[in-house]
Length: 194
Image (cartoon, rainbow, N blue to C red):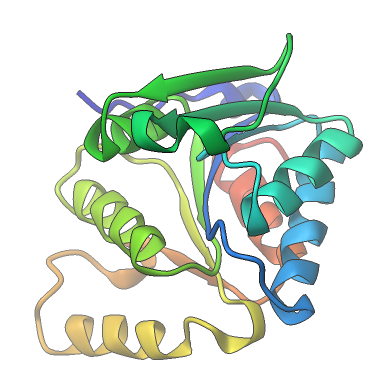
Protein backbone atom coordinates (compact mmCIF):
# COMPACT_ATOMS: atom_id res chain seq x y z
CA UNK A 1 0.00 0.00 0.00
CA UNK A 2 2.78 2.48 0.85
CA UNK A 3 5.42 2.68 -1.84
CA UNK A 4 8.04 5.38 -2.06
CA UNK A 5 7.62 7.97 -4.76
CA UNK A 6 11.02 9.03 -5.96
CA UNK A 7 10.29 12.33 -7.70
CA UNK A 8 13.42 13.80 -6.19
CA UNK A 9 15.78 11.08 -7.31
CA UNK A 10 16.59 12.78 -10.60
CA UNK A 11 17.14 16.30 -9.31
CA UNK A 12 13.47 17.21 -9.37
CA UNK A 13 11.54 18.92 -6.61
CA UNK A 14 10.29 16.82 -3.72
CA UNK A 15 6.91 16.53 -2.06
CA UNK A 16 7.81 16.90 1.62
CA UNK A 17 5.25 15.88 4.20
CA UNK A 18 5.49 17.85 7.43
CA UNK A 19 3.77 16.62 10.58
CA UNK A 20 3.41 19.43 13.13
CA UNK A 21 1.17 21.22 15.58
CA UNK A 22 -1.81 23.38 14.72
CA UNK A 23 -1.32 25.29 18.01
CA UNK A 24 -0.04 28.85 18.32
CA UNK A 25 3.49 28.47 19.66
CA UNK A 26 6.35 30.71 20.86
CA UNK A 27 9.13 31.97 18.60
CA UNK A 28 11.57 29.25 19.66
CA UNK A 29 9.34 26.85 17.68
CA UNK A 30 7.90 29.11 14.97
CA UNK A 31 11.28 30.52 13.88
CA UNK A 32 12.81 27.14 12.84
CA UNK A 33 9.50 26.17 11.22
CA UNK A 34 9.48 29.40 9.18
CA UNK A 35 13.13 28.84 8.22
CA UNK A 36 12.37 25.32 6.99
CA UNK A 37 9.28 26.56 5.11
CA UNK A 38 11.31 29.25 3.35
CA UNK A 39 14.02 26.77 2.36
CA UNK A 40 11.40 24.32 1.11
CA UNK A 41 9.64 26.96 -1.00
CA UNK A 42 12.84 28.48 -2.40
CA UNK A 43 14.01 24.98 -3.31
CA UNK A 44 10.91 24.53 -5.47
CA UNK A 45 9.59 21.75 -3.25
CA UNK A 46 5.94 21.08 -2.38
CA UNK A 47 4.62 21.07 1.18
CA UNK A 48 2.34 18.14 1.98
CA UNK A 49 0.69 18.91 5.32
CA UNK A 50 -2.44 18.51 7.43
CA UNK A 51 -4.11 21.43 5.72
CA UNK A 52 -4.89 23.53 8.78
CA UNK A 53 -5.09 27.31 8.62
CA UNK A 54 -4.07 27.71 12.27
CA UNK A 55 -1.01 27.73 14.47
CA UNK A 56 2.29 26.28 13.33
CA UNK A 57 0.60 24.62 10.35
CA UNK A 58 -0.38 28.07 9.05
CA UNK A 59 3.11 29.46 9.71
CA UNK A 60 4.68 26.73 7.58
CA UNK A 61 2.10 26.88 4.79
CA UNK A 62 2.41 30.68 4.59
CA UNK A 63 6.21 30.45 4.52
CA UNK A 64 6.28 27.86 1.75
CA UNK A 65 3.76 29.77 -0.35
CA UNK A 66 5.53 33.12 0.14
CA UNK A 67 8.81 31.53 -0.96
CA UNK A 68 7.27 30.13 -4.16
CA UNK A 69 6.51 26.56 -3.11
CA UNK A 70 3.34 24.59 -3.79
CA UNK A 71 0.86 23.34 -1.15
CA UNK A 72 -0.88 19.97 -0.94
CA UNK A 73 -3.14 19.79 2.11
CA UNK A 74 -4.86 16.72 3.51
CA UNK A 75 -7.43 17.64 6.12
CA UNK A 76 -9.98 15.38 7.76
CA UNK A 77 -13.75 15.57 7.68
CA UNK A 78 -14.23 16.72 11.29
CA UNK A 79 -11.61 19.48 10.85
CA UNK A 80 -12.64 20.59 7.35
CA UNK A 81 -13.91 23.95 8.68
CA UNK A 82 -10.33 24.75 9.78
CA UNK A 83 -8.78 23.77 6.46
CA UNK A 84 -6.95 26.38 4.40
CA UNK A 85 -8.70 27.53 1.24
CA UNK A 86 -6.41 26.92 -1.73
CA UNK A 87 -6.54 27.44 -5.47
CA UNK A 88 -4.64 25.83 -8.32
CA UNK A 89 -1.87 24.79 -8.56
CA UNK A 90 -2.29 24.10 -4.82
CA UNK A 91 -4.51 21.23 -3.69
CA UNK A 92 -6.68 20.31 -0.68
CA UNK A 93 -8.06 16.83 -0.01
CA UNK A 94 -10.52 16.00 2.77
CA UNK A 95 -10.08 12.51 4.23
CA UNK A 96 -12.85 10.56 5.97
CA UNK A 97 -10.88 9.94 9.15
CA UNK A 98 -7.42 10.25 10.70
CA UNK A 99 -6.25 6.86 9.43
CA UNK A 100 -7.07 7.79 5.83
CA UNK A 101 -5.47 11.19 6.35
CA UNK A 102 -2.16 9.67 7.49
CA UNK A 103 -2.20 7.21 4.59
CA UNK A 104 -2.84 10.00 2.06
CA UNK A 105 -0.15 12.24 3.55
CA UNK A 106 2.44 9.48 3.27
CA UNK A 107 1.24 8.44 -0.19
CA UNK A 108 1.62 12.00 -1.54
CA UNK A 109 5.09 12.50 -0.01
CA UNK A 110 8.62 11.69 -1.10
CA UNK A 111 10.02 12.45 2.36
CA UNK A 112 8.77 13.25 5.87
CA UNK A 113 9.71 15.91 8.41
CA UNK A 114 8.36 15.84 11.95
CA UNK A 115 8.28 19.20 13.70
CA UNK A 116 7.14 20.07 17.21
CA UNK A 117 3.65 18.94 18.12
CA UNK A 118 1.39 17.20 20.58
CA UNK A 119 -0.20 13.76 20.69
CA UNK A 120 -1.45 13.94 17.09
CA UNK A 121 2.04 14.68 15.79
CA UNK A 122 3.51 11.95 17.99
CA UNK A 123 0.91 9.48 16.68
CA UNK A 124 1.79 10.39 13.10
CA UNK A 125 5.52 10.14 13.79
CA UNK A 126 5.36 6.73 15.44
CA UNK A 127 3.13 5.29 12.71
CA UNK A 128 5.45 6.54 9.96
CA UNK A 129 8.47 5.07 11.77
CA UNK A 130 6.67 1.77 12.44
CA UNK A 131 5.78 1.47 8.75
CA UNK A 132 9.38 2.22 7.80
CA UNK A 133 10.68 -0.31 10.34
CA UNK A 134 8.57 -2.99 8.64
CA UNK A 135 9.63 -1.99 5.12
CA UNK A 136 6.27 -0.50 4.09
CA UNK A 137 8.08 2.61 2.86
CA UNK A 138 11.69 3.72 2.44
CA UNK A 139 11.17 7.48 2.51
CA UNK A 140 13.66 9.54 4.49
CA UNK A 141 12.27 10.75 7.83
CA UNK A 142 13.68 13.74 9.72
CA UNK A 143 12.81 14.84 13.23
CA UNK A 144 13.44 18.59 13.48
CA UNK A 145 14.52 18.96 17.10
CA UNK A 146 13.72 22.68 17.55
CA UNK A 147 15.00 24.05 20.85
CA UNK A 148 15.67 20.50 22.07
CA UNK A 149 11.95 19.64 21.96
CA UNK A 150 12.62 16.00 21.04
CA UNK A 151 15.71 15.43 23.23
CA UNK A 152 13.74 13.06 25.48
CA UNK A 153 12.33 11.13 22.54
CA UNK A 154 15.79 10.88 20.99
CA UNK A 155 17.10 9.44 24.26
CA UNK A 156 14.20 6.97 24.39
CA UNK A 157 14.81 5.83 20.81
CA UNK A 158 18.50 5.30 21.62
CA UNK A 159 17.52 3.22 24.65
CA UNK A 160 15.16 1.16 22.46
CA UNK A 161 18.03 0.56 20.05
CA UNK A 162 20.57 -0.23 22.79
CA UNK A 163 18.24 -2.69 24.52
CA UNK A 164 17.22 -4.54 21.35
CA UNK A 165 13.73 -3.16 20.78
CA UNK A 166 14.51 -1.90 17.27
CA UNK A 167 15.25 -4.56 14.65
CA UNK A 168 16.92 -1.95 12.43
CA UNK A 169 19.48 0.72 13.32
CA UNK A 170 17.98 3.98 14.56
CA UNK A 171 19.93 5.82 11.84
CA UNK A 172 18.03 3.75 9.26
CA UNK A 173 14.70 4.95 10.65
CA UNK A 174 15.09 8.64 11.41
CA UNK A 175 17.56 11.50 11.20
CA UNK A 176 17.55 14.05 14.02
CA UNK A 177 18.24 17.58 12.74
CA UNK A 178 18.89 20.46 15.10
CA UNK A 179 18.33 23.14 12.44
CA UNK A 180 16.10 23.64 9.40
CA UNK A 181 19.01 23.79 6.95
CA UNK A 182 20.30 20.42 8.20
CA UNK A 183 16.87 18.85 7.83
CA UNK A 184 16.47 19.91 4.20
CA UNK A 185 20.09 19.09 3.35
CA UNK A 186 19.59 15.54 4.68
CA UNK A 187 16.42 15.09 2.59
CA UNK A 188 18.00 16.46 -0.57
CA UNK A 189 21.04 14.24 -0.13
CA UNK A 190 18.86 11.19 0.63
CA UNK A 191 16.75 11.79 -2.47
CA UNK A 192 19.67 12.69 -4.72
CA UNK A 193 18.62 16.29 -5.37
CA UNK A 194 21.86 17.89 -4.12
